[in-house]
Amino acid sequence: MFLLRRLRSYDVHLYMQTVRTAYFSLELSKGLNLTEEEQEVIYRSALLQDVGKMQQNKTDFLNHPFYSVELLKSFIQDGLVDEEAILQHHENLDGTGYPLGLCWESISLNV
Image (cartoon, rainbow, N blue to C red; front, side, top):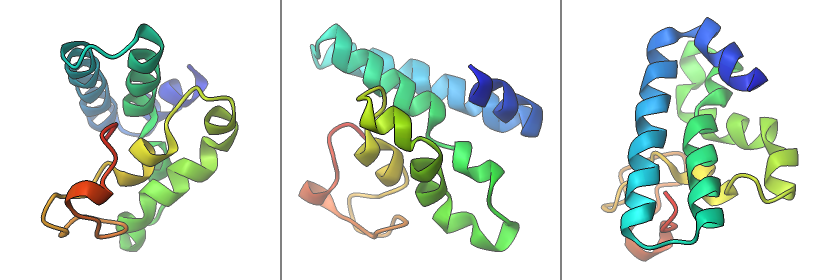
């Protein structure tokens, strides 16, 4: 909750986008018949995927997924969020995404 409040105070539009993304991620995970535990992990991951934007500067935008993973390391270790989902949430199927430029099967289903 602390990170979400901090994100809201940092940028309310980013916060609202994050809440919408989390809602749709949860609905998709339900549609995929994932377990409740898997749904919760995906929901939390979507809520927190952009917290790294609070640590970046404007010229370092493409690396915010790495910052998010670093900030969420303890949540990742506890299994509360999915590291791949956080790191890969801007990857595109055709490989034009960032930060890793992954494509198709290389991208986690949890993204």
